[in-house]
Length: 174
Image (cartoon, rainbow, N blue to C red; front, side, top):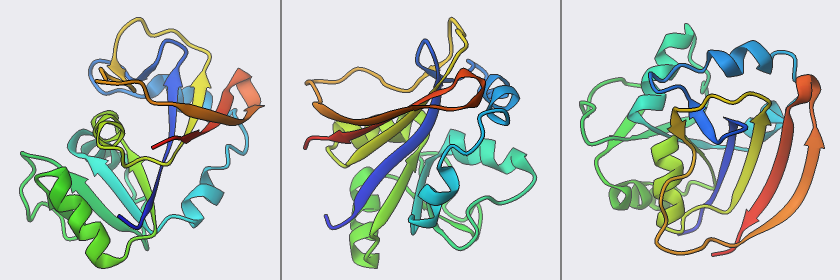
């Protein structure tokens, strides 16, 4: 494995990345008041985006394709392989990793709850940037799921953004 995989994601204070129905209104309402989150700089360094099916389908509702110029891979057991000419669908993480290695991917943006969890369990992630939004949802789609062992992190930095958002960067020990 020759690539560097990173997460850049927002959660509610209680650890959810979306409401149970997938809605991220709580984020978009507050996110525009955050100011510069570093996302554009982060994306400028990324050559490949890996999404899960749910995140891919959410992106389709945006009204524009946010990954122009990036290779986009979708990890899904149900999405048709020919769903969209802008993406490559993979049925297994092993097939995805093989493609990333074969293509010489350098810097991966892993996005979506299941993708983040899958990458963590498989030891594929190098770094996390998590922006915590000051809202409690009470229920929803969690960023992190069950793990079979501890994953050690090094805290690199934390900064306060507008609207009370807090962003922290971590290096993952593999």
